[in-house]
Amino acid sequence: MSECIMRRLNIIGPAVTKLRFEREWTQEILAARLQCQGVNVSRDMLANIESGRTQITDEHIMAFQQVFGVRIILFFPKSVQELDEKYATHEHNKPLKTPPQHRR
Image (cartoon, rainbow, N blue to C red; front, side, top):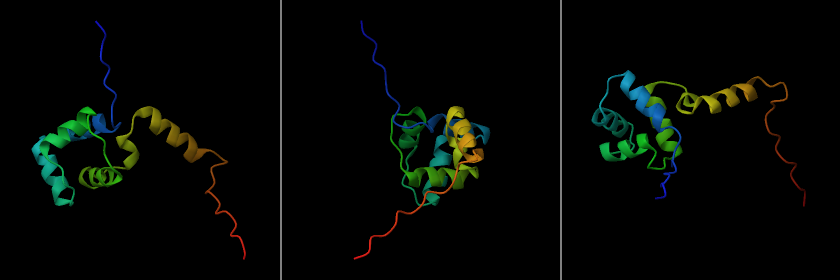
């Protein structure tokens, strides 16, 4: 028998679940709060986001940020947070330069 390994379609689902439980919100309550932010999310869709079975958009991430009132980086796994911190404090971390415009 071969095992079927499900690939996660998003990496923020576990953090959404954790934040929701910390606030003692049901999936129905979180879905309603997201809908108040103008994001069309049902309880079923939220369950699929939390389990990693549904892809999400930047609109979802921003709505989660507003609803939970936390920094976006907190939705990502610790390894991503640590890498972000490394780049934020790296001395060579400079804004990308705009390429020179060609003159005609």
